[in-house]
Length: 260
Length: 331
Image 1 (cartoon, chains in turn yellow, brown):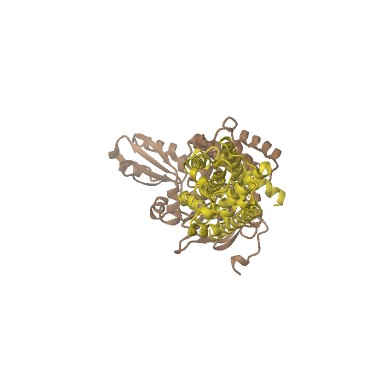
Image 2 (cartoon, one colour):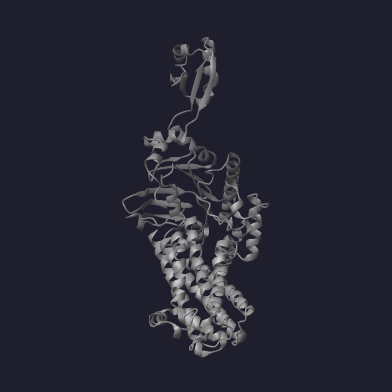
């Protein structure tokens, strides 16, 4: 099947994933409501942190925090892609896809593309809400665009990882129980506090957490401030993660089919 | 020469040679199955739960790899040319795997996209199929609201989106009411009239009789009998006549009077069982004979062979005993 047809297949599968996701309230709530609730709690509860000597100047505190919100939403969007795939496997819909003459990787790419699209929508919503509550993005439209792209790449990368786990285990309940893992990933990156204010252990962990470079890239783009991070590096890390985790999912798919 | 080295067949819509599927622990769900289904044929694959029907279908539809043997569908090897096989086949599996949050139209369009149909083509085909399976009115409803019969009809439509040459139906009428079952049978016959080869698995002898040109009986992974439905029924002889007498005490006299018609024995609970050479056509002569002997008949019932009768004749045990012995292999 040619590349153009494959693109149509991926688009069709992604469209299905997005359509169904928006019909499932239990997926929408964690993907949108939970990050916004956490944004409100952190922005109001820890705003005194702005007074700390090393805290960067980003205008309204909510503007600093929203980068973490984008990350959180993206991680949850990615996880739900894996949950949905596990549901397809357990429910038999996966077999329907396997009897179609499509490249197997298209099934994964459809999920990853849908997660990226959901991450994009989340980015628009979260940045919009933060704007309503006083955040101002000196990086302009371009900066906002880069930030949204970084969020989408984060969603896509976790979707690849979650799909790999789904294909390897076929277990919906296992994927659902990975939900707390997203908070571990989030809080071991400087998602809600600058890296300089983390304790040495947390800072060391953040050095090895790729999400740290992405969230710092988001802030650098939003506020056009290289002191906050490197958005180019964030894009590179994000794209690399998407490729790596999608490759992992493809390997898991091949192994699943070879051992059936 | 092993089955793996064998030359591919030059004819036959579905061909299998020494097909086998083993699982860790030694379970052989499919154990040396040979098949040859001609193009345009309806082939019924009959057996109880756990016999290996669904595993065989999953191998032929490229969902499972055989551990031994080879198979070709529409002229292509199911292992080395799996992609080509998938372009030629339509599949409706035992569990109609439909996304409950999608509508019928959405799922048909998706299926069209998966089979390479362009958007307009998929749209036209979707409308055609919805009309064919009588789901136009329900097309925009979510699949979670569909009845069992509607789900099965949609599943059939999905299998037909790309006009496959070979159609696999895995127990398509299990759980359906008689009206839905009859409707599905009509549709299968219609598809076959259009030239589609149909490979149909079923637990129901009646379904095989109604639809299939030939039937293969599978038991514990092996094909134990194959032929037309009439050939298979002849294994168990003609239908039996159950005769109830107004006066059961005259059973001995009745048995003697009916000896000329065939083998007659007492029935548990009263009455007689007669296995006559001309089966159900013996009803009138039997009643006439008993009437001439002055013996009044209360009722005559014809008992046709069941799957258990066929199974018992070819395997030495009933299909029910097989189901109680073991569970289906992991598919």
